[in-house]
Length: 499
Image (tube, rainbow, N blue to C red):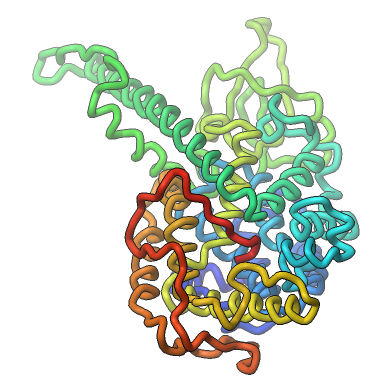
């Protein structure tokens, strides 16, 4: 917990391999991420409290090849990469980040290694309990049960944050909103929702592009005004500079060029200035102090401050109506007003997008990890195919070891599912990313593999080689694209959940 971020993060990142760490080390990595993202601070928990929760969640994961606790740890680590290195946290409140990471840890708990289609065809107990998104809803209920068991939100009950839960949400208090956020994020990992999530991503990209443009123009104009004010106060060589006109509109190239730099300048996990904790704001003196535990109850009656002036902390401070009478509002801040680019509902959509993206992150990882996770997915899929044959059930797509070609499945998944999604998603990140170049590199590696020979694989840790084999004959599939990004509008692809 104390050393991972500082000593190991820069050398691992997307190359993170959970099999390189002991059980205790993996728990320490989880705690390191929860601490680095201030989850422990905002939930007012000790590391030992969170460790108890993480250990219980670990016990809910089954010993299956892919959907194991290693996958959960890997998802949390990749979420940290997206939040910190790709600076996606610039759009989120601190409670959003806590919800996202907890959802990432819990999103596949209870997964039996047999997907939703199997559950439905076999009419299992889970299928009878849940009408759709069977395993996702099962994980949601387990997560809720264990959050309640550990009373994880005990220190934020009856707490309100007008920036975190605004007028666009039904939930008022922070704890209820976080529980809804976690459950909704887990539900977003259902692959049947993939294409609707891609459309939501496009909407968010468009919305943020417009806001970034307005922010860049406003800040550029303010800089010009400050420059003019300084020039007026101090003439240069006895001459006054020529006054500049206000920004002419959205078509100015110099304005548009600033949009990306505005987002790049935002701190990834903090408000406008480096604040390491939550604060209250004095409406009289604009003094800033750490939030006292007794303040959490007072805050529930607080509204969103009116922006009249900004302090160095990014807090909005107002005074009484020139009456001279002191006023004080207690507000727990989860995001600065300056950084609130999205409302609560929009931020929840982003949380679902990020968790779904990281859940299918394997095709954009460095090749060794991309291949390793693909191998494990195939082992689990072929296990399911064998069970389906024994039960005389239809064998799910891509789960028959005698006909499935890992190479072609990987190419189709990368080209048809991942590339269109991530091409939109990376537009949200205010820094250059490595995801799309890695995807193209991996697709080229897959395309160079032959289909008429057994694939050479290195056995993943914990895998049973007797359960893993490849077709000796090439498999003819209706789609074979390695580099095309253009697809027929009327063509539909059926992808089994968990593929």
